[in-house]
Image (cartoon, rainbow, N blue to C red; front, side, top):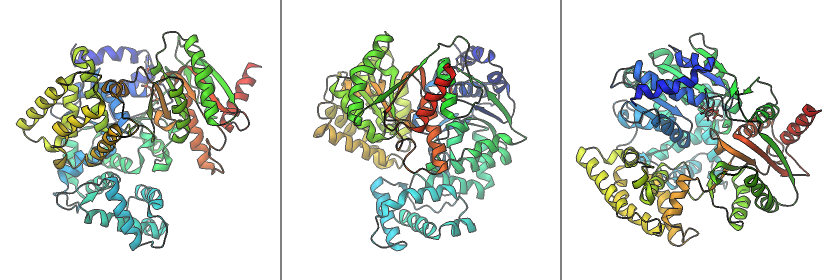
Length: 595
Ligand SMILES: Nc1ncnc2c1ncn2[C@@H]1O[C@H](COP(=O)(O)OP(=O)(O)OP(=O)(O)O)[C@@H](O)[C@H]1O
């Protein structure tokens, strides 16, 4: 099928939903505000395919921005099904990678961003060193500089205008620390993650020609998960879309805003949709969750938004499991009775259809250990994962492993996809056609010669590292930190807890069908599973102890996000003596509804 035929075909589903259809037909700036499972991302991807085909002429294209690398990958997969691949015409990625690859790297010099020659992205250790020096120069004393990192980050992200009284006066100590920290980073020849959008916003504000250059390349800006993207992106959107003329298509849900602690402000989305020049579309149907789960999710949120399950949806069930003892004990109950009962009730269910979600990564340790005892393979996407799931390099290696373990035969993944992602990762070192060709040829040969799932992972990784990755790393400023993640993981595979891991097991981490999903509630954002088990939902965990009013609201939204990931069964596990207030409320409202 041609690309046009693909999106026309996919749009048939949108036609049956009047809200989705008006978003699909929109001609100017459009914002879709809607609840979980309402098809926001689906509408966004099909609309993007349409705009690329009908509204902009090659080589101009669209930039598509989302919250994190995981969400970006999800968008890529969905767009691939519509025949759209990221490349020159289409940018898909986070605000940070948009800022870095589209604005800072190409224009740092001409836009006079004040960066040293040959700057690169700081590793964790380099950031730590810069913070230590800045701390000694400004705050001083015996405190631990790293304890200031979090508040410093928030300050940087919340007040963008460094010339303002707000910047100087809200917290003079923090303002001084940030300025000294950035100076130390520059002295080391480095920028950090938070610098990327800040440098981009500043450069865009200072240079009209830069705004025009971005507009020339991307007349369309598409944003998913707008509620979580923070002030820097909002400022870019305001400038690029409402002054320069980029067309905006954004989707989001204020009720799913769960990243307030990183500087996200849900009211920015509301403000955007209140604008006269923006068409706002609201969607009411939930295509994901069974009807009972949709009803109960209103209780979970504590607000009736009038969402309904789509026609023909299954009923879905909410189960409550009060537990006794420690989390280790809860986890044993989970694998001794809850999971086996689910498997019996839903024959044909794959482990990958089940997700176990908890409020904090350390609670997941009890789940991971019990899973191992009961013989269940798991894949973790939290800070205690084998390696950060957000690492593009590691995720690329997982895909390479899948190719070596049978993808070369089945086409899942296709070699083209590996080559494309590799070109993006190492783009800075692959400037010439010959370099690109050599990279693809070497990659193919290296993977082809190692098509054996029983190979020890440390051997496979070390060889790939020395043949393919190591020669490129010195010229790639953007993947230094990721290279460090890889080195640490290889070390764990040589001597540590992953010593016996095989290539096939590593490939399974990428594919995930045979593994139960273990994740924090935060990392489950945007995903969906047949069965969701929310684990450790106790007062003191969600919300945490002595919460402020706003912390209660954010915890409640997090509870709601977890709740609405489930299609068929939702299980809630908690200590019977101290259930979370949200659990008790849902329970009593469900009981009232039955009477
Ligand atoms: N018009 C439709 N007809 C049939 N299925 C649909 C339709 N719209 C969406 N869906 C399905 O509903 C599910 C949820 O869609 P999607 O992930 O796009 O929702 P979302 O609004 O982005 O969700 P969330 O905010 O919870 O991440 C998907 O399985 C999608 O295929």
